[in-house]
Length: 114
Image (cartoon, rainbow, N blue to C red; front, side):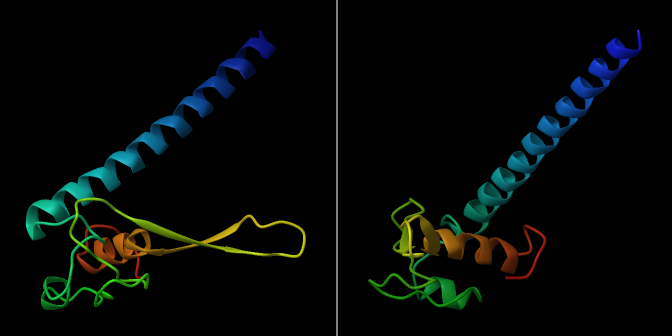
């Protein structure tokens, strides 16, 4: 019975972790949809001058900088691979993917300061 109790306990812990992850995903989904409803663009995808007018980071027109936003309805990402001496697998996120988190934080839709 002791072994059975331990196994059931492990299943409960695993189920709680999965529920927590699902809850976090739903929280971010709600934040993105709220942002789009309020500002008319997906976070990170808002072009300038709208982004600057709302107090978000300025967008780099045609660039790949942190605030690049083209308003096309997609969160376009930029991945800069870096060579670490043995393999090329490190990726730094920039562009609209990075601006997404900054915009959600600035709009106070998620916790944290970027």
